[in-house]
Amino acid sequence: MDLLNSHIMNKKNLMQGTNILFLGGLLWILQSAGCVAQHKQKTNPVTFDKQVLTKDFVSEGAAVGDVNHDGKLDVIAGAFWFEAPDWKMHEIAKPEKYVVGVGYSNSFLNFSMDVNQDGWIDQVRIDWPGKTAVWHENPKNEPGHWPVHIIHSAVGNESPLFVDVDGDGRMDIVCNDPEKKQIIWLKSPSKKGDTAWTVTVIDGRDGIPGTHQYTHGQGYADINGDGRKDVLIHTGWWEGPADPKQPGWKFHPADLGSDCAQMYVMDLNNDGLADVISSAAHDYGIWWHEQKRDAGGELSFVHHLIDSSFSQSHSLALADVNGDGHPDLVTGKRYFAHNGADPGAHDPAVLYWYEYKPGKTPVWIKHEVDNDSGSGLNLVVEDINGDKLSDIIVANKKGVHIFLQKK
Image (tube, rainbow, N blue to C red; front, side, top):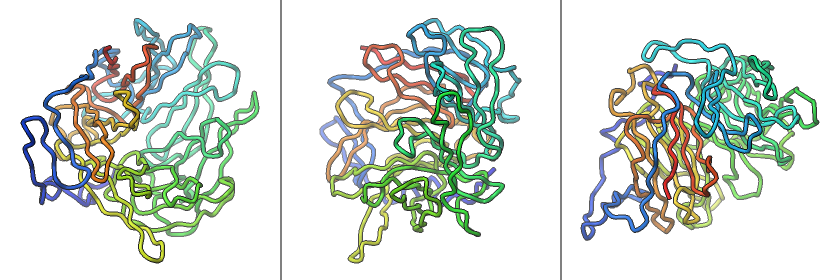
């Protein structure tokens, strides 16, 4: 996988120039813009009840959906689905045995959708980067393993995106094809009963960045404010056309930090320009990248540290955790991402949410969810039990865990 010496920043560099202010015994605020604050007292504390679905290493991605049509959201991870509310384990496929610290699973990311539109939630499973991506067809409560269908023969990038590219209300996949050296998006079947995913080549020119199977970092959002969504990697972005089915998007080089995970875009400092959130997949650091414009309208980015207290934040989610109307950041350590070879690999498998406080200098208040679970390659933040509170679902080498937010 990617070489450790390719990372741009190490922990020591990240901490240089950071000054700490003590404010009334309540908060520590790093003076650099977008820094993290430690919340000492909370008027409305957010707490979670940890539920262990399995301690076995079965997947590094998780999804949720009502698998058995009982009105409850179940958890999907690798070769299993876990039935709510008691989380009974059922097989989707024949399980394989994975040993922590030795190898990897065939389930890097998991998503859920009704692919063939038969009214039943299916599993979309992303295998090892660059291998074949598949979907498992829900057997509608019939016994046996779920039928497997190919999505695309080579799906690369370690954070392929599950997003609605063409605005038809159905989720698609943004990734690369490392065999053909292309940046692509895969349109999900649009007609009932169809199973074929349609390929659009975003960029297939010789020598373009982001086509290696282990490419790190990807986002899909409007970065330049033209009302069209763009595809981001940490070295630049492809400008989305009026019709996303149009091939040959224009690439704009940009410095969006180091090798990362999911990339999120929003105006964080209320200056009217879209900024970017990213994290170091195999090193220390979480950042927000402040967009700047020159007189000619060219985009550049200033990097601001959010936190550098733990490493391997290989998955990010942006969701309103505390119900204040502002999206918060949820992330954690991908435990043993490189089987112990990354910086900080043996540190606790932490999981955090960062409370976002918007303003000219945005503030991120760090809250620990857990220190013995971490995260994988994709996590879910969703109300899984119907109490209108955001819950967190993770899967990685520590197992599969649910964190139910307490009232």
